[in-house]
Image (tube, rainbow, N blue to C red; front, side, top):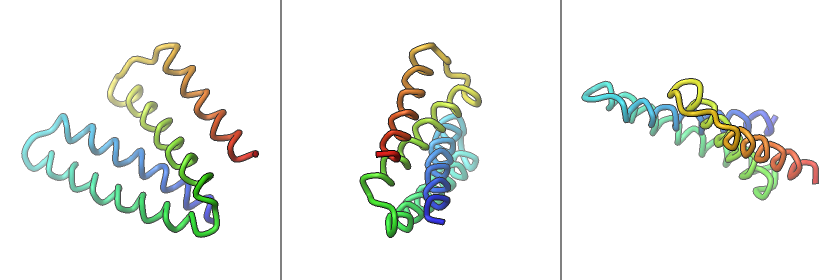
Amino acid sequence: MNWIILIVAGLCECGFTFCLGKAKMAAGWEAFGWYAGFVVVSALSMILLAKATKTIPIGTAYPVWTGIGAVGTVLIGILVFKEPATFWRIFFIVTLIASVIGLKMV
């Protein structure tokens, strides 16, 4: 169950970076709403990470959490914010995924 919590925490990390990106492009109350979403999802991400580390070692949980956040954020950047999907970006994201999987297996 704590692995599911950790995955949700990583997805929340993607959520708060998405909110930050949308807030950057908004103004007025709309920006305030995105910043409020950023705060809520950030807090939820941290709370879930803390809960997951009760049974998952921090040396494993933190890299998995940041890996999910990093990969998800790059994908959001490419798919939503139209950032470039260069060969090297994809290469290093795949390397990051392989590293997190390797860390879990060791």
